[in-house]
Structure formats: C-alpha cells, structure tokens
Length: 331
Image 1 (cartoon, helix red, strand yellow):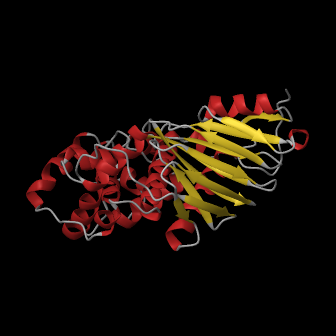
Image 2 (cartoon, one colour):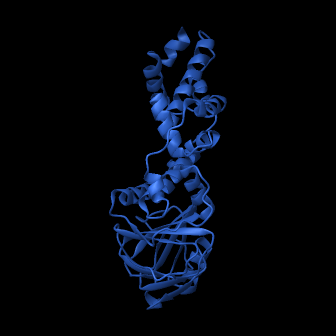
Image 3 (cartoon, helix red, strand yellow):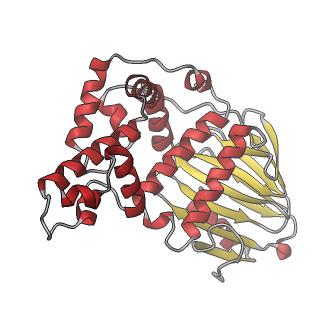
C-alpha cells in the first residue's frame, strides 16, 4: 500500500490512499464512506486515489479508480452521498429502478440512505463526493423550513449540475475543497468553515429535486416586530460570541428564510448585517468610554467584538460613525 499526494487533484493535502490493489481500494472507501462490493474489469489497470477530510457537517472527498470499476452499495440508513462528477462519466442505478448517467460537470447523483445503489465508473471518471449525515442535512432543512423534518428526504436520483443552482453548488464545493488545501485558508477559520458548509447544504437543497423544494422557494412569511424581539435581545446578549443565522432563527422560533425576510423588511438589513451594526455600536461605546487612555488598543476592542480584519473594520466603523476608530478614541 502506498500513500502519496497527487498534485493538481482536489484535497491533495488530505491523502487517504493511492493503490493498485483492489482489496486496499475497497477497504479505504469503506472506512471513509460506506461498506460496499468493488469489482474491476481489469484489476491490473486499477489506479485508485482517495483524498478525504471529515468536517463538522459532512465529509468531503475526491475519488477516482483509473479503470472500469463497479461499486455495489447497500442502504446506509444514516447518510446521503452526493456524487459530483468532474471528469469522465459514471452509470448508476438504484433499488427502485432509477437510472442515471453522470457526465463531467453536467450531472451528478444523490445516493438515498434507504436505497441500495450500483455505480459503474469509466476509467476517466473523477468525483468529488460529499458524505452528509442525515442528522446534519435534515436538521438544516428543518431550520430553513421552520418545521421538523422527520423522515429521509426523497431526493431525485439525478442532480442537474448544468442549471444555475447546480453550477453554483459545484463551484461552491470546489471552492470549499480548494480552500481546505490552501495554507492559511478556510481550514484555519472554523467559524467561516462552518458557515460555508451550511451554505453548501442550502445550495444542495435548492439545486436538487425533492418534495420540500417548492416550500423552500416559496416567498417566506414575515413576522411582526414583536416576534423579532427575542432575536434582537439574543443578539444584544451574545454580540461578542460567534453567531449564525441558524442560531438567530432558533432564538426567534422561526425559519432562517423568515428571519432574513423579516430583518430585511423591518430593518433594511440582513440578520448578520444587523449583528455587525450592534457590534460596531459596542465598539464605539468602549472607545468613547476609554477616550484619551494611552494604554487602550483599538485592535483589542475590535477583536473582542468579532472584528479581526482591521482594515475592513476601520472602513465599516467610519461608514457608521463618520470618523475613524482612532479619532473616537482621541476624543
């Protein structure tokens, strides 16, 4: 067994295995994704590469076999698998008789957790594969809808990557894995990484066909100002903590979509823009309270309230208060 990094392939910084041995290839994919049977028309031509990394909400991986290969997979029960074909093609079938052919950057498939699946790989086929736990995706959908999802999401087998939503999903996934590979990228920014993972799951739910899609795309309900008070209070009490739209929606017992629509309607701001406004006001209050104190550092106060990019913070501060943070502190 040889473990190597393969240049110019996704997630090369997270190598799992490169092998020409069929049993080793099967075991590696079993360990990362799911138990399965693996067959190759000509095992001597096998050149399998698997790179993968487990994140908070899902596992992202790159897989290729380099020869004609067949995977027969039982129902996982606990995970969805999103196969995004980036090179070559695959032919897939599932228990209910569904058939799909994936083409590079045009079609993918979603493996349902309650269906057995078979996928035939061409020698050129390469895929980015997301393994998404049911708990992650179904809770995320529940948050978007504002009601509990209690059963597996009945996705269509095929995933159209040629639509605007499908292309956006693929681009976001490729950006995500590229950032994980880049030194100093999103792998070192847990809050941004978590938000991008959640964004990718939202894009998946928007791009794929499933029974909840019409509800997701329908105009969201607005709530009265009174119902936003718990959210506003929550922001005030936790402005110095990492906050996400999902947390804010839960604080107000509403869906993320209703949260966004209501903040836009009532304040003319997105929820996170409102959070930034509150944080800037706290910074302003602290700078004025410490006016003239030579020991106080603006960077310390800014970082306390979640501003870590000093140049962007200074610009936002000046737009809000008409003067620079240093000018406020001097006064």
